[in-house]
Image (cartoon, rainbow, N blue to C red):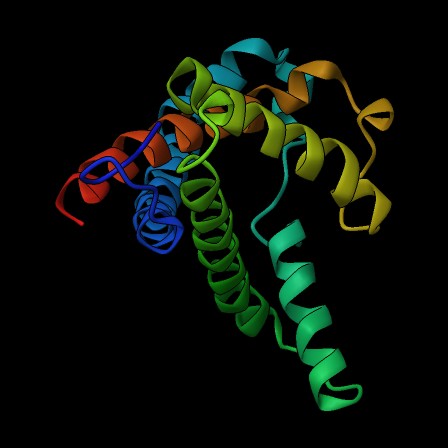
Length: 175
């Protein structure tokens, strides 16, 4: 259990988790665009590679950013460039929020830290990519796509979970 001088501090834990989540969101992006992309390409046949997402296709985070703006403004939508920028804000905001919740939680319960944060990353992948994204019509359901199409995202969430845990530990040690 995380503690400082033998006491639990959920606020300090949450602050460390937010920092960890922000760092992990960046590392996750780097993984997706580098090693993750190469892994994904190696698993696809050449016909699938030709049908990959174009840079114009909207991601779940871009759709979320647009939905937030539409709700707040009473109907206005973002341009494609605005959706791209908003998607980045949603990605980092969600990463920080989940990291903060994780950091506060592990002050009292060590189970989420299992596997050096990989359990945490796996839960986020399952709850987010496999359940929430299709349920909110932000992307296709897992049954509507080949299993290999989820590989990059799953691995990226493992990277996110591990990075969140390592960064959280480092920040929490000084708080």
